[in-house]
Amino acid sequence: MTSPQPRADLTEETRNRLATKLGAAGLRVTEPRLRLAHLLFRHGNRHVTAEALLDEAHASGLRVSQATVYNTLNQFQAAGLLRQVQVDQARSYFDTNIDVHHHFYVEGEARLIDIAADAVDVARLPDSPAGYDVDRVEVIIRLDKSDRS
Amino acid sequence: MTSPQPRADLTEETRNRLATKLGAAGLRVTEPRLRLAHLLFRHGNRHVTAEALLDEAHASGLRVSQATVYNTLNQFQAAGLLRQVQVDQARSYFDTNIDVHHHFYVEGEARLIDIAADAVDVARLPDSPAGYDVDRVEVIIRLDKSDRS
DNA sequence: AATAAAATTAGAATGATTCTAAGGCTATTT
DNA sequence: AAATAGCCTTAGAATCATTCTAATTTTATT
Image (cartoon, rainbow over all chains, first blue to last red; front, side):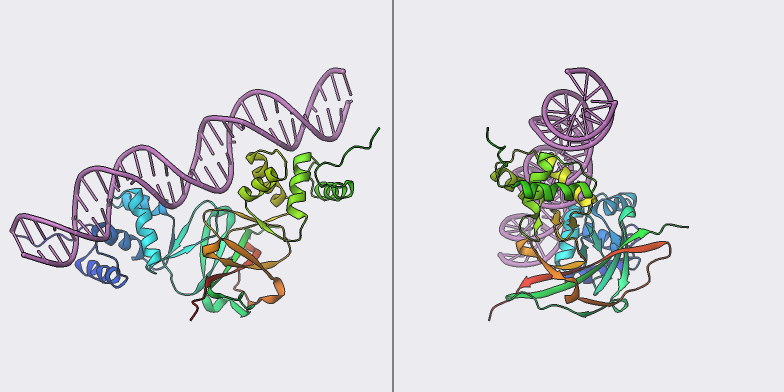
């Protein structure tokens, strides 16, 4: 008898690492979550829309429904594995970088670019209204294509 | 014969002031635009959604369609009379304050609060990617209800 | 007044996201 | 290792903000 094939390009080691990550976040380990987590987290930080992740999943041979992609993104976000970035009224972006940081956004191109936290210096903040605490401070630098002369 | 009734609570003076404002922004002066402008600009700065403005219009006796409200908000925004604020994936807010400034946002309450530009000090910004210019810098401070002890 | 151009409209269409309720897995209990 | 309960996943429908369409109405011009 042969040992079980690691599915897709997920090695046992990767599966174990992701399973630990899901478990630590309080999420049950299931095949769709494992495979989506792999797509999300395999290549450093990235920004992804639900639609793009669904396409990517299908391209990689994973048969998941749209609902699962949305559920998973929302769960990952609630569990602190992803951050939702709100820059475009049309679509939500999910950011695999959950550290404090900021963004460039190129309106016309629907393109998000990370800015390291220490590249922006927000020196002074106003007091929050009474009864409210700061959850987080978001800096979004909206960019235009420069006119070339 | 009597002089023509000023419609609704718009005095001739207000109508003239708003007409000038629309004209200066390159927009034709029409009754719906004049009346919506009045609702938007009569009471200092405010944040409004399309839905809220439509309700307000109807409540004030102005019979406009949803399409006109959306068109007008978009045109006012394109003309620089309003600013669109993107904080919530569900809904767009329009801000009558077009000066440089920032926002508190209370997630659970869908409530936007202006922060004067000089109350936030963004001391240092990263260089923009080559070929792009900064359009504007947005600071959003997301708030939580503080736990009372 | 007649004409042309832009505004407004009702209602349909769109598109992202969420919901439903039915069936499939996972983990737990015997 | 069966039985059970609870969470997951799913297809497809539903929702909701926003945009579009094509026709009508206003506004400005001739």
